[in-house]
Length: 257
Length: 257
Image 1: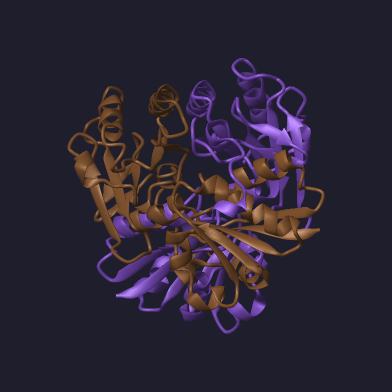
Image 2: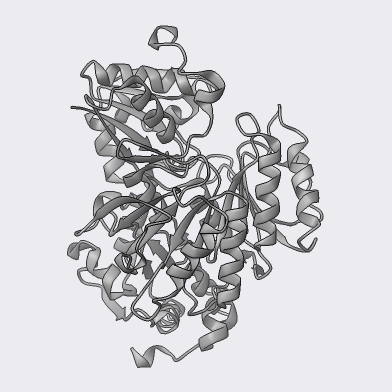
């Protein structure tokens, strides 16, 4: 069996890349990935490897090519930003491997990583302390009606919502429509965390309101966190209390430990 | 300003602990945490530190104590398993810090980590490739009606569902009730990933069906992943296709790169 690692590269900063990911990249002879994510990796990690670099829509070509090199006996890594298991490359690699009948000779291992939702939450404060839903607004592969249905039920269930792929050059109207839809269920005062380029150059972190967030200020490098009914702005942070203080109060001091 | 890091320790295996977390622990003079998570850390990372170890329900006492030492000028870390920002300690630390008025002297930094949902997904295959909802079944702090409402809307929205805290000694009936509720909306054939002790000693990974999963086999160290309508079992893996193959087919070979 030849290993094929699907390596999560996390937000992109090497200080958030765990040893399991580094080890997989070190062992790989071939590394495939979307150019943007390859460029975020330290150059020395890719030195001496065969690099298969593709553009943003080259997902199928990239994963197929990686499977071919692994099938041919060369240890291979597919890199995927954030967590490869969340809107990343892990699923496509498995689908292709089973379709091609390669799973007898290729051993796929997904190396989990820090997802964009965790990175955005850490920079905002603690908005994901309670139940949340992750929704991508990209209708490139998903019918828009399904996306709207999910947004509606996430709002009715009062989930905190993490919105991936909120807007891009080619998808300009979707976010505005979702913000309007959310306002039919949620208060216009609901805080919305707007995190761009988390843990990368050009990072920005803002807290806006559902009723006044301007979709034009949002791009494809942004993740949005829409609060639930209990999400609060504390100082410059966004926090969804889990209920400890309501139940137990601020509690005893350190003396009891 | 004295730093107070809320450090995500991920699944517990040091190979999944990124340098940012290691660095925070190295700089801390005081480390507070639930005993189970402290025990998973390499002993040398805690050497020479003042350790504040508390039991499972000591969350408020632990975070208060950590805030006190930071307020007194000692760099402090609160450790939290998985991602501290997802059902972890980050929210409580912020709540207490603002309530005590400590944010002028204590600089809180959440160090994001690999959440249990990412660890479970990586071991199962790729079940979180599409929209998902995370729901905790613990009604210790959340009224049961809210939990049921969220389960219902997550099912109606056809989200993949990640179920945290599915069952414990003190909470024996909740999971059975949720499985019954899910069956009013979803097929009994819906695959359910059952991951226990992900990336820890005693790890187990199974794929069951919604109609036949026995709640008795599930404990508080387990995370469940309930499929959406499109989630499939491929060989021994659980995969929720994102739609690339439906749209583009298995695509061209590596020659095109």
